Length: 94
Image (cartoon, rainbow, N blue to C red; front, side):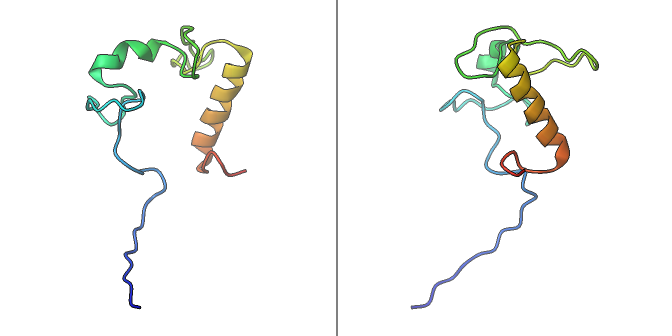
């Protein structure tokens, strides 16, 4: 049987539509750089690790707010996430 296929070329970063970090939330983001919609903006000050409700901390060198609290495991996960973001590799590549 004959079948057709379509080739799609992506940069590996843009996959799907930008959406709120709250599962199943259908509200639009203010900008594509936001993590939460307007309704959930109050959550951006809380640790991004599932089940953690501690306040986020700032990077000691750059003073930029991080997405994790100061829990040792959460700090390591934030560092790994930041490192993989700058490496140009997927978080699953080593």
